[in-house]
Image (tube, rainbow, N blue to C red; front, top):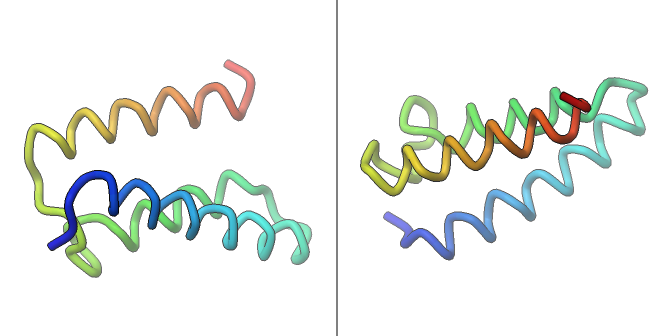
Length: 71
């Protein structure tokens, strides 16, 4: 189990790698963000349990995703 800061740094690093990979494959970078979130969540690798901190992090992720797609 990772603490919140380590988890955020890990997610950001994974997102950078996945976005670069998806851009090289001519796919939308948003899919890379979604894939990193799905893999890092409680249903795949279980890096972060569901908690209040996870819900705040999820809200931040939704805002960042909406910002990146231009809403």
